[in-house]
Amino acid sequence: MATKKIPILRIVPMTGRPSYRAIGRVFGQKATDIALADLTKDQVAKLKADPWLSVTEAQVDEIVPDETAQPGDAVGANGAAGGAAKQ
Image (cartoon, rainbow, N blue to C red; front, side, top):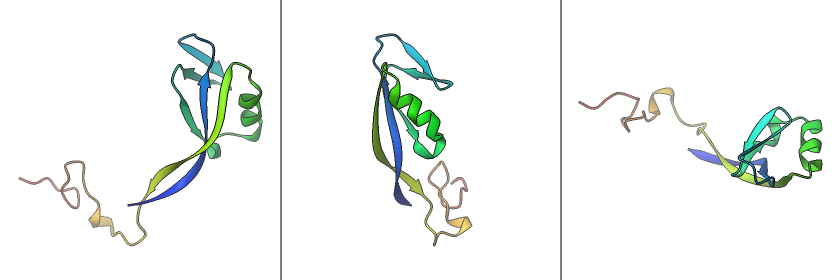
């Protein structure tokens, strides 16, 4: 599997409360990463303007399938090639 960098917003509420609501989402006390592609320009602007949020732009690795992989080459949840269970 290959990886690619995707731009995100890392959002941390600074309220001291268990959760905080903004742009129709609930943010817990820990950092929440949202891909910029999943947000509108208006939502990004609202998050950055919110005085109760710490908003940082960052990039994270996203796993992407190899273009050379064949459909039967996938490794199943149990680690067996092709998703077949080992007996």
